Image (cartoon, rainbow, N blue to C red; front, side):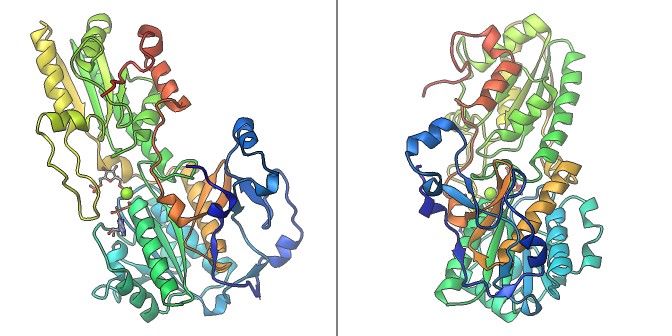
Length: 455
Ligand SMILES: Nc1ncnc2c1ncn2[C@@H]1O[C@H](COP(=O)(O)OP(=O)(O)O)[C@@H](O)[C@H]1O
Ligand SMILES: O=P(O)(O)OC[C@H]1O[C@](O)(COP(=O)(O)O)[C@@H](O)[C@@H]1O
Ligand SMILES: [Mg+2]
Protein backbone atom coordinates (compact mmCIF):
# COMPACT_ATOMS: atom_id res chain seq x y z
CA UNK A 1 0.00 0.00 0.00
CA UNK A 2 1.51 3.35 -1.03
CA UNK A 3 0.81 6.02 1.54
CA UNK A 4 0.92 9.75 0.96
CA UNK A 5 1.40 12.58 3.41
CA UNK A 6 -2.35 13.23 3.59
CA UNK A 7 -3.05 9.63 4.60
CA UNK A 8 -0.91 10.15 7.68
CA UNK A 9 -2.53 13.30 9.04
CA UNK A 10 -4.33 12.79 12.34
CA UNK A 11 -7.65 14.35 13.35
CA UNK A 12 -7.75 17.33 15.71
CA UNK A 13 -10.84 18.27 17.70
CA UNK A 14 -10.05 21.96 17.18
CA UNK A 15 -7.72 24.83 17.90
CA UNK A 16 -5.42 24.50 20.92
CA UNK A 17 -6.18 27.59 23.03
CA UNK A 18 -4.98 26.69 26.51
CA UNK A 19 -1.41 27.04 27.70
CA UNK A 20 0.04 23.65 28.50
CA UNK A 21 1.46 23.26 32.00
CA UNK A 22 4.58 22.10 30.16
CA UNK A 23 4.87 25.16 27.89
CA UNK A 24 7.68 26.88 29.81
CA UNK A 25 9.81 23.75 29.64
CA UNK A 26 9.00 23.31 25.94
CA UNK A 27 9.86 26.89 25.02
CA UNK A 28 13.51 26.15 25.69
CA UNK A 29 13.66 23.02 23.54
CA UNK A 30 14.74 22.65 19.94
CA UNK A 31 14.85 19.69 17.58
CA UNK A 32 17.95 17.62 18.13
CA UNK A 33 18.86 14.07 17.17
CA UNK A 34 17.20 13.10 20.45
CA UNK A 35 14.19 15.36 20.49
CA UNK A 36 11.59 15.92 17.79
CA UNK A 37 9.92 19.32 18.23
CA UNK A 38 6.16 19.53 18.06
CA UNK A 39 5.95 20.94 14.54
CA UNK A 40 8.39 18.42 13.09
CA UNK A 41 7.44 15.11 11.49
CA UNK A 42 8.94 11.62 11.44
CA UNK A 43 9.44 9.88 8.12
CA UNK A 44 7.39 6.81 7.32
CA UNK A 45 10.27 5.18 5.44
CA UNK A 46 13.94 5.07 6.24
CA UNK A 47 15.91 3.68 3.34
CA UNK A 48 17.50 5.77 0.64
CA UNK A 49 15.87 3.70 -2.08
CA UNK A 50 12.36 4.05 -0.66
CA UNK A 51 12.73 7.79 -0.16
CA UNK A 52 14.30 8.32 -3.59
CA UNK A 53 11.42 6.49 -5.23
CA UNK A 54 9.01 9.27 -4.20
CA UNK A 55 11.05 12.00 -5.93
CA UNK A 56 9.61 14.50 -3.42
CA UNK A 57 11.04 17.21 -1.20
CA UNK A 58 11.45 16.19 2.47
CA UNK A 59 8.38 18.22 3.47
CA UNK A 60 6.15 16.30 1.07
CA UNK A 61 7.42 12.84 1.93
CA UNK A 62 5.01 10.57 3.82
CA UNK A 63 5.60 11.28 7.51
CA UNK A 64 3.93 11.02 10.91
CA UNK A 65 3.17 13.79 13.34
CA UNK A 66 5.64 13.63 16.21
CA UNK A 67 4.16 12.64 19.56
CA UNK A 68 4.92 14.59 22.71
CA UNK A 69 3.76 17.62 24.66
CA UNK A 70 2.46 20.75 22.94
CA UNK A 71 2.84 24.31 24.21
CA UNK A 72 -0.85 24.95 23.61
CA UNK A 73 -3.45 22.33 24.39
CA UNK A 74 -7.07 21.82 23.42
CA UNK A 75 -8.63 20.78 26.72
CA UNK A 76 -8.72 22.83 29.91
CA UNK A 77 -7.27 20.21 32.30
CA UNK A 78 -9.47 21.45 35.14
CA UNK A 79 -12.54 20.34 33.17
CA UNK A 80 -11.25 17.00 31.95
CA UNK A 81 -12.59 13.65 33.04
CA UNK A 82 -10.54 10.85 31.50
CA UNK A 83 -11.62 7.27 30.88
CA UNK A 84 -9.39 4.22 30.45
CA UNK A 85 -10.32 0.80 29.11
CA UNK A 86 -8.24 -2.30 28.30
CA UNK A 87 -9.65 -4.76 25.79
CA UNK A 88 -8.95 -8.11 24.15
CA UNK A 89 -6.29 -10.61 25.20
CA UNK A 90 -3.77 -9.82 27.89
CA UNK A 91 -0.21 -8.78 27.28
CA UNK A 92 2.60 -7.75 29.61
CA UNK A 93 2.62 -4.06 30.49
CA UNK A 94 -1.10 -3.26 30.55
CA UNK A 95 -0.87 -2.15 34.17
CA UNK A 96 2.22 -0.11 33.36
CA UNK A 97 0.28 1.79 30.69
CA UNK A 98 -2.68 2.38 33.03
CA UNK A 99 -0.32 3.59 35.74
CA UNK A 100 1.56 5.85 33.32
CA UNK A 101 -1.68 7.40 32.05
CA UNK A 102 -2.96 8.10 35.55
CA UNK A 103 0.33 9.54 36.76
CA UNK A 104 0.80 11.78 33.72
CA UNK A 105 -2.80 13.02 33.75
CA UNK A 106 -2.70 13.86 37.44
CA UNK A 107 0.88 14.96 38.02
CA UNK A 108 1.62 16.91 34.83
CA UNK A 109 -1.86 18.08 33.82
CA UNK A 110 -3.61 18.10 37.19
CA UNK A 111 -6.60 16.20 35.84
CA UNK A 112 -8.84 15.48 38.82
CA UNK A 113 -11.01 12.60 37.69
CA UNK A 114 -10.06 9.37 35.92
CA UNK A 115 -12.56 6.59 35.42
CA UNK A 116 -11.45 3.02 34.75
CA UNK A 117 -14.04 1.00 32.83
CA UNK A 118 -14.05 -2.63 33.90
CA UNK A 119 -13.71 -5.73 31.76
CA UNK A 120 -13.02 -4.20 28.39
CA UNK A 121 -15.54 -2.44 26.21
CA UNK A 122 -18.26 -4.39 27.98
CA UNK A 123 -17.67 -1.85 30.75
CA UNK A 124 -18.98 0.85 28.43
CA UNK A 125 -22.33 -0.83 27.88
CA UNK A 126 -25.47 0.43 29.61
CA UNK A 127 -25.52 -2.53 31.96
CA UNK A 128 -21.99 -2.09 33.24
CA UNK A 129 -21.20 1.61 32.81
CA UNK A 130 -21.71 2.46 36.48
CA UNK A 131 -19.43 -0.26 37.76
CA UNK A 132 -16.15 1.63 37.33
CA UNK A 133 -12.91 2.10 39.25
CA UNK A 134 -11.79 5.58 40.34
CA UNK A 135 -8.18 5.73 39.25
CA UNK A 136 -5.86 7.81 41.42
CA UNK A 137 -2.07 7.85 41.77
CA UNK A 138 -2.46 5.98 45.04
CA UNK A 139 -4.63 3.32 43.46
CA UNK A 140 -2.13 2.65 40.67
CA UNK A 141 1.13 3.07 42.59
CA UNK A 142 2.08 -0.61 42.70
CA UNK A 143 0.03 -2.11 39.90
CA UNK A 144 3.00 -2.49 37.54
CA UNK A 145 4.35 -5.20 39.81
CA UNK A 146 1.75 -7.61 38.48
CA UNK A 147 0.83 -8.88 35.04
CA UNK A 148 -2.67 -8.64 33.57
CA UNK A 149 -4.80 -5.53 33.95
CA UNK A 150 -6.43 -4.19 37.09
CA UNK A 151 -9.32 -3.08 34.90
CA UNK A 152 -10.01 -6.52 33.50
CA UNK A 153 -10.61 -7.19 29.82
CA UNK A 154 -13.01 -9.05 27.55
CA UNK A 155 -13.92 -10.05 24.04
CA UNK A 156 -17.36 -9.66 22.45
CA UNK A 157 -19.30 -7.05 20.50
CA UNK A 158 -20.69 -3.76 21.81
CA UNK A 159 -22.87 -1.10 20.26
CA UNK A 160 -20.98 2.12 19.47
CA UNK A 161 -23.97 4.39 20.22
CA UNK A 162 -24.46 2.77 23.60
CA UNK A 163 -20.80 3.34 24.38
CA UNK A 164 -21.07 7.02 23.40
CA UNK A 165 -24.04 7.34 25.77
CA UNK A 166 -21.87 5.90 28.53
CA UNK A 167 -19.13 8.43 27.87
CA UNK A 168 -21.66 11.24 28.02
CA UNK A 169 -23.30 9.93 31.19
CA UNK A 170 -19.91 9.59 32.90
CA UNK A 171 -18.78 13.00 31.63
CA UNK A 172 -15.74 11.62 29.79
CA UNK A 173 -13.89 14.08 27.51
CA UNK A 174 -10.89 11.91 26.83
CA UNK A 175 -10.95 8.13 26.40
CA UNK A 176 -7.86 5.94 26.25
CA UNK A 177 -8.44 2.59 24.57
CA UNK A 178 -5.66 0.09 25.16
CA UNK A 179 -6.42 -2.66 22.69
CA UNK A 180 -5.41 -4.72 19.71
CA UNK A 181 -6.83 -4.78 16.19
CA UNK A 182 -10.28 -5.47 17.62
CA UNK A 183 -10.01 -2.70 20.19
CA UNK A 184 -8.69 -0.24 17.60
CA UNK A 185 -11.57 -1.19 15.29
CA UNK A 186 -14.04 -0.60 18.08
CA UNK A 187 -12.34 2.70 19.02
CA UNK A 188 -12.48 3.85 15.40
CA UNK A 189 -16.23 3.12 15.28
CA UNK A 190 -16.69 4.83 18.62
CA UNK A 191 -14.82 7.93 17.43
CA UNK A 192 -16.94 7.99 14.26
CA UNK A 193 -20.12 7.83 16.36
CA UNK A 194 -18.77 10.66 18.57
CA UNK A 195 -17.99 12.72 15.46
CA UNK A 196 -21.43 12.04 13.96
CA UNK A 197 -23.02 13.47 17.12
CA UNK A 198 -20.69 16.49 17.04
CA UNK A 199 -19.27 15.73 20.49
CA UNK A 200 -16.05 17.00 21.95
CA UNK A 201 -14.52 13.73 23.11
CA UNK A 202 -11.02 12.60 22.20
CA UNK A 203 -10.37 8.90 21.59
CA UNK A 204 -6.73 7.89 21.81
CA UNK A 205 -5.52 4.36 21.17
CA UNK A 206 -2.56 2.65 22.76
CA UNK A 207 -2.07 -0.38 20.48
CA UNK A 208 -1.65 -3.64 22.34
CA UNK A 209 -0.95 -7.11 21.01
CA UNK A 210 0.96 -10.07 22.24
CA UNK A 211 1.26 -11.26 18.64
CA UNK A 212 3.04 -8.05 17.51
CA UNK A 213 0.70 -8.06 14.53
CA UNK A 214 -0.29 -4.39 14.43
CA UNK A 215 1.35 -2.33 11.67
CA UNK A 216 3.12 1.04 12.00
CA UNK A 217 4.70 0.20 15.29
CA UNK A 218 8.27 -1.00 15.74
CA UNK A 219 7.31 -3.68 18.19
CA UNK A 220 4.30 -3.78 20.47
CA UNK A 221 4.71 -3.19 24.19
CA UNK A 222 5.02 -6.34 26.27
CA UNK A 223 6.22 -8.33 23.31
CA UNK A 224 9.77 -8.49 24.60
CA UNK A 225 8.66 -9.72 28.04
CA UNK A 226 6.42 -12.31 26.41
CA UNK A 227 8.99 -13.77 24.07
CA UNK A 228 11.57 -13.87 26.87
CA UNK A 229 9.13 -16.05 28.81
CA UNK A 230 8.47 -18.16 25.72
CA UNK A 231 12.22 -18.66 25.31
CA UNK A 232 12.37 -20.28 28.75
CA UNK A 233 9.94 -22.95 27.58
CA UNK A 234 12.07 -23.58 24.50
CA UNK A 235 15.07 -24.12 26.76
CA UNK A 236 13.12 -26.55 28.93
CA UNK A 237 11.93 -28.55 25.98
CA UNK A 238 15.35 -28.67 24.37
CA UNK A 239 16.92 -29.92 27.61
CA UNK A 240 14.24 -32.62 27.84
CA UNK A 241 14.58 -33.60 24.19
CA UNK A 242 18.37 -33.76 24.34
CA UNK A 243 18.21 -36.03 27.38
CA UNK A 244 15.86 -38.54 25.74
CA UNK A 245 16.66 -41.13 23.10
CA UNK A 246 15.21 -39.95 19.78
CA UNK A 247 13.92 -36.91 21.67
CA UNK A 248 11.34 -34.67 20.06
CA UNK A 249 10.76 -31.29 21.70
CA UNK A 250 7.79 -29.27 20.53
CA UNK A 251 6.76 -25.86 21.86
CA UNK A 252 3.55 -24.28 20.61
CA UNK A 253 3.47 -20.52 21.03
CA UNK A 254 0.82 -17.87 20.58
CA UNK A 255 0.58 -16.18 17.22
CA UNK A 256 -2.78 -16.44 15.52
CA UNK A 257 -1.75 -14.98 12.17
CA UNK A 258 1.81 -13.78 12.78
CA UNK A 259 4.80 -15.77 13.90
CA UNK A 260 6.78 -13.05 15.63
CA UNK A 261 6.78 -14.68 19.07
CA UNK A 262 7.92 -17.99 17.58
CA UNK A 263 10.72 -16.27 15.63
CA UNK A 264 12.02 -14.07 18.44
CA UNK A 265 11.73 -16.71 21.16
CA UNK A 266 13.59 -19.16 18.91
CA UNK A 267 16.33 -16.66 18.19
CA UNK A 268 16.61 -15.76 21.89
CA UNK A 269 17.79 -19.25 22.82
CA UNK A 270 19.03 -20.35 19.43
CA UNK A 271 17.98 -23.86 20.39
CA UNK A 272 15.28 -24.52 17.80
CA UNK A 273 15.99 -26.73 14.80
CA UNK A 274 12.72 -25.98 13.05
CA UNK A 275 10.47 -22.94 13.34
CA UNK A 276 6.97 -23.04 11.87
CA UNK A 277 4.95 -19.86 11.43
CA UNK A 278 1.62 -18.99 9.78
CA UNK A 279 3.32 -16.88 7.10
CA UNK A 280 5.37 -19.77 5.68
CA UNK A 281 3.30 -22.79 4.62
CA UNK A 282 4.92 -26.19 4.96
CA UNK A 283 4.22 -29.75 3.88
CA UNK A 284 4.36 -32.74 6.18
CA UNK A 285 5.16 -35.34 3.52
CA UNK A 286 7.86 -35.48 0.86
CA UNK A 287 11.63 -35.15 0.86
CA UNK A 288 11.51 -31.48 1.82
CA UNK A 289 8.54 -31.98 4.11
CA UNK A 290 8.60 -31.59 7.85
CA UNK A 291 8.53 -35.31 8.73
CA UNK A 292 11.59 -36.14 6.63
CA UNK A 293 13.37 -33.16 8.04
CA UNK A 294 12.59 -34.17 11.63
CA UNK A 295 13.84 -37.67 10.90
CA UNK A 296 17.11 -36.33 9.46
CA UNK A 297 17.66 -34.24 12.60
CA UNK A 298 16.96 -37.12 14.95
CA UNK A 299 19.24 -39.47 13.03
CA UNK A 300 22.11 -36.98 12.81
CA UNK A 301 21.84 -35.12 16.11
CA UNK A 302 19.85 -37.52 18.29
CA UNK A 303 16.99 -35.11 18.96
CA UNK A 304 15.08 -32.23 17.44
CA UNK A 305 13.46 -29.03 18.79
CA UNK A 306 10.48 -27.60 16.96
CA UNK A 307 8.89 -24.24 17.72
CA UNK A 308 5.48 -23.80 16.17
CA UNK A 309 3.24 -20.75 16.18
CA UNK A 310 -0.36 -21.71 16.88
CA UNK A 311 -1.54 -20.30 13.53
CA UNK A 312 0.95 -22.34 11.46
CA UNK A 313 -0.17 -25.24 9.30
CA UNK A 314 -3.90 -24.51 9.58
CA UNK A 315 -4.29 -25.65 5.97
CA UNK A 316 -2.95 -29.08 6.98
CA UNK A 317 -5.56 -29.32 9.73
CA UNK A 318 -8.29 -28.25 7.30
CA UNK A 319 -7.23 -30.92 4.80
CA UNK A 320 -7.64 -33.51 7.55
CA UNK A 321 -11.04 -32.20 8.63
CA UNK A 322 -9.58 -31.00 11.93
CA UNK A 323 -10.81 -27.41 11.67
CA UNK A 324 -14.19 -26.15 12.82
CA UNK A 325 -15.11 -24.46 9.51
CA UNK A 326 -15.16 -20.71 9.93
CA UNK A 327 -15.50 -20.75 13.69
CA UNK A 328 -14.77 -17.49 15.49
CA UNK A 329 -14.65 -16.28 19.07
CA UNK A 330 -16.93 -13.60 20.55
CA UNK A 331 -14.87 -10.83 18.96
CA UNK A 332 -14.84 -12.43 15.53
CA UNK A 333 -11.27 -13.77 15.76
CA UNK A 334 -10.64 -17.05 13.92
CA UNK A 335 -10.64 -20.13 16.13
CA UNK A 336 -7.62 -22.25 15.36
CA UNK A 337 -7.06 -25.96 15.13
CA UNK A 338 -4.39 -27.64 17.27
CA UNK A 339 -1.28 -27.74 15.13
CA UNK A 340 0.81 -28.87 18.11
CA UNK A 341 -1.33 -31.97 18.52
CA UNK A 342 -1.11 -32.78 14.82
CA UNK A 343 2.68 -32.47 14.88
CA UNK A 344 2.96 -34.67 17.96
CA UNK A 345 0.84 -37.40 16.39
CA UNK A 346 2.26 -37.37 12.87
CA UNK A 347 5.88 -37.12 14.00
CA UNK A 348 5.45 -39.97 16.48
CA UNK A 349 3.80 -42.16 13.81
CA UNK A 350 6.39 -41.31 11.16
CA UNK A 351 9.44 -41.94 13.35
CA UNK A 352 7.99 -45.12 14.78
CA UNK A 353 7.32 -46.42 11.26
CA UNK A 354 10.93 -45.50 10.39
CA UNK A 355 12.20 -47.77 13.16
CA UNK A 356 12.97 -45.10 15.76
CA UNK A 357 11.54 -44.92 19.26
CA UNK A 358 10.68 -41.25 19.75
CA UNK A 359 10.17 -39.65 23.14
CA UNK A 360 7.99 -36.59 22.61
CA UNK A 361 8.10 -33.61 24.98
CA UNK A 362 5.33 -31.23 24.04
CA UNK A 363 4.70 -27.89 25.81
CA UNK A 364 1.90 -25.43 25.08
CA UNK A 365 2.69 -22.58 27.49
CA UNK A 366 -0.24 -20.55 26.16
CA UNK A 367 -1.40 -18.01 28.80
CA UNK A 368 1.80 -18.45 30.82
CA UNK A 369 3.49 -16.22 28.27
CA UNK A 370 1.18 -13.26 28.07
CA UNK A 371 0.31 -13.02 31.75
CA UNK A 372 3.82 -12.18 32.96
CA UNK A 373 4.89 -8.86 34.46
CA UNK A 374 6.54 -6.47 32.01
CA UNK A 375 10.33 -6.53 32.14
CA UNK A 376 12.26 -3.34 32.78
CA UNK A 377 12.55 -2.53 29.07
CA UNK A 378 8.81 -2.94 28.48
CA UNK A 379 7.99 -0.94 31.61
CA UNK A 380 9.93 2.01 30.25
CA UNK A 381 8.30 1.58 26.85
CA UNK A 382 4.79 1.45 28.38
CA UNK A 383 5.42 4.52 30.49
CA UNK A 384 6.61 6.53 27.50
CA UNK A 385 3.65 5.39 25.39
CA UNK A 386 1.36 6.49 28.22
CA UNK A 387 3.02 9.91 28.34
CA UNK A 388 2.63 10.28 24.58
CA UNK A 389 -1.03 9.22 24.78
CA UNK A 390 -1.83 11.83 27.43
CA UNK A 391 -0.09 14.60 25.47
CA UNK A 392 -1.99 13.61 22.32
CA UNK A 393 -5.32 13.64 24.12
CA UNK A 394 -4.74 16.95 25.89
CA UNK A 395 -3.76 18.50 22.55
CA UNK A 396 -7.13 17.42 21.13
CA UNK A 397 -5.97 14.65 18.84
CA UNK A 398 -8.59 12.00 18.27
CA UNK A 399 -9.02 8.73 16.34
CA UNK A 400 -5.27 8.63 16.83
CA UNK A 401 -2.96 5.92 18.10
CA UNK A 402 0.38 6.57 19.75
CA UNK A 403 3.16 4.26 18.67
CA UNK A 404 6.91 4.06 18.44
CA UNK A 405 8.00 4.08 14.83
CA UNK A 406 11.66 3.82 13.90
CA UNK A 407 12.47 4.61 17.54
CA UNK A 408 10.48 7.86 17.63
CA UNK A 409 7.08 8.25 19.30
CA UNK A 410 4.51 9.36 16.72
CA UNK A 411 0.77 9.78 16.11
CA UNK A 412 -0.84 7.39 13.64
CA UNK A 413 -4.42 7.79 12.37
CA UNK A 414 -6.33 4.90 13.93
CA UNK A 415 -7.70 3.58 10.60
CA UNK A 416 -4.11 2.91 9.53
CA UNK A 417 -3.47 0.73 12.56
CA UNK A 418 -6.29 -1.55 11.44
CA UNK A 419 -5.59 -1.26 7.70
CA UNK A 420 -3.66 -4.51 7.58
CA UNK A 421 -1.83 -7.01 9.73
CA UNK A 422 1.86 -6.96 10.56
CA UNK A 423 3.35 -10.31 9.59
CA UNK A 424 6.75 -11.89 9.34
CA UNK A 425 7.95 -11.29 5.80
CA UNK A 426 9.28 -14.56 4.32
CA UNK A 427 11.64 -12.37 2.28
CA UNK A 428 12.59 -10.17 5.20
CA UNK A 429 15.67 -10.25 7.36
CA UNK A 430 13.93 -11.61 10.48
CA UNK A 431 12.95 -14.82 8.72
CA UNK A 432 16.41 -14.93 7.17
CA UNK A 433 17.88 -14.80 10.70
CA UNK A 434 15.63 -17.67 11.75
CA UNK A 435 16.72 -19.73 8.76
CA UNK A 436 20.35 -18.94 9.52
CA UNK A 437 19.98 -19.79 13.21
CA UNK A 438 18.22 -23.08 12.51
CA UNK A 439 20.85 -24.06 10.00
CA UNK A 440 18.45 -24.25 7.07
CA UNK A 441 20.64 -22.16 4.82
CA UNK A 442 23.76 -24.19 5.50
CA UNK A 443 22.30 -27.68 5.55
CA UNK A 444 19.65 -27.22 2.90
CA UNK A 445 20.85 -24.42 0.67
CA UNK A 446 19.02 -25.49 -2.46
CA UNK A 447 15.48 -24.32 -1.84
CA UNK A 448 15.51 -20.66 -0.88
CA UNK A 449 12.91 -21.26 1.82
CA UNK A 450 13.27 -24.93 2.69
CA UNK A 451 9.93 -25.34 4.41
CA UNK A 452 7.99 -23.15 2.03
CA UNK A 453 5.72 -25.04 -0.27
CA UNK A 454 3.96 -23.44 -3.21
CA UNK A 455 0.30 -24.35 -2.90
N1 LIG B 1 -14.17 -5.25 13.67
C1 LIG B 1 -14.57 -4.77 14.85
N2 LIG B 1 -15.39 -3.70 14.90
C2 LIG B 1 -15.79 -3.21 16.09
N3 LIG B 1 -15.42 -3.72 17.29
C3 LIG B 1 -14.62 -4.77 17.30
C4 LIG B 1 -14.14 -5.35 16.08
N4 LIG B 1 -13.35 -6.39 16.40
C5 LIG B 1 -13.35 -6.46 17.74
N5 LIG B 1 -14.09 -5.50 18.29
C6 LIG B 1 -14.31 -5.29 19.72
O1 LIG B 1 -13.10 -4.87 20.34
C7 LIG B 1 -12.90 -5.56 21.57
C8 LIG B 1 -11.57 -6.22 21.59
O2 LIG B 1 -11.42 -7.04 20.44
P1 LIG B 1 -10.61 -8.40 20.47
O3 LIG B 1 -10.48 -8.88 19.08
O4 LIG B 1 -11.21 -9.32 21.46
O5 LIG B 1 -9.20 -8.01 21.09
P2 LIG B 1 -8.02 -7.07 20.60
O6 LIG B 1 -8.43 -5.67 20.86
O7 LIG B 1 -6.92 -7.48 21.47
O8 LIG B 1 -7.78 -7.38 19.17
C9 LIG B 1 -14.05 -6.51 21.72
O9 LIG B 1 -14.95 -5.99 22.66
C10 LIG B 1 -14.66 -6.60 20.35
O10 LIG B 1 -16.05 -6.76 20.33
O1 LIG C 1 -7.94 -17.33 24.64
P1 LIG C 1 -8.01 -15.91 24.20
O2 LIG C 1 -8.12 -14.95 25.33
O3 LIG C 1 -9.07 -15.70 23.19
O4 LIG C 1 -6.66 -15.54 23.53
C1 LIG C 1 -6.00 -16.30 22.61
C2 LIG C 1 -5.45 -15.51 21.47
O5 LIG C 1 -5.27 -14.16 21.72
C3 LIG C 1 -4.03 -13.72 21.24
O6 LIG C 1 -3.23 -13.53 22.37
C4 LIG C 1 -4.07 -12.45 20.49
O7 LIG C 1 -5.17 -11.71 20.88
P2 LIG C 1 -5.21 -10.14 21.00
O8 LIG C 1 -5.48 -9.64 19.62
O9 LIG C 1 -6.31 -9.90 21.95
O10 LIG C 1 -3.90 -9.66 21.54
C5 LIG C 1 -3.52 -14.85 20.38
O11 LIG C 1 -2.15 -14.99 20.33
C6 LIG C 1 -4.19 -16.04 20.98
O12 LIG C 1 -4.46 -16.99 20.04
MG1 LIG D 1 -6.70 -8.98 18.16
